[in-house]
Amino acid sequence: MNQKKIFERQENKIEELRERANKAEDSLEVLSLENHNLNYFTLQGNENAMTYLERLGYEAADVETMISEKIYDFNLQKGSNPLVPFEGMNGDMKINKVKFLNHKWIQADFTDGKFWGEMILEYYFKENGDLDLTPIASFLYQN
Image 1 (cartoon, rainbow, N blue to C red):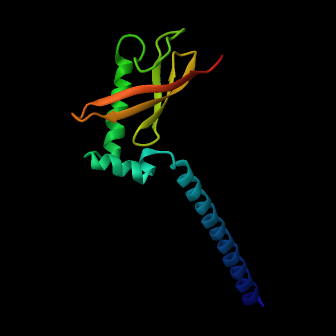
Image 2 (cartoon, one colour):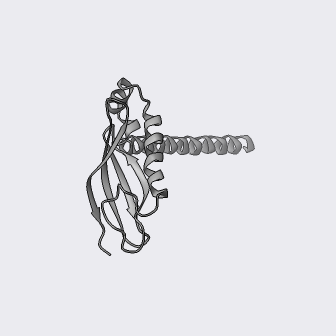
């Protein structure tokens, strides 16, 4: 009788662990799909955009690093970041965060410490290899 109870407990434990493993697999599948959806509008999640840059002789990760550094370096200059199309009302406007949407556009967040906004930057490499950054749309949140 004792062996039967031990066996039943082990069987119950095995079944419980199977259910937990199945739930974990389901959660992993959901998170994987969510991650795929979140990466849809990113440079490194877009095969066509990466191929475009590779044909120009660039790697997507290198482009992101190089352009991000250039954008953030503008923050180090005296005054506002020249890419931000608004004058700061509470100080200098600086870019806080950038997100590469594809091989042409970047979304950027900026603030002067009190007021903040977002913008879309267009970027491309000229034939001589120089980088061109142009703000094409922007808005300032109302406080």
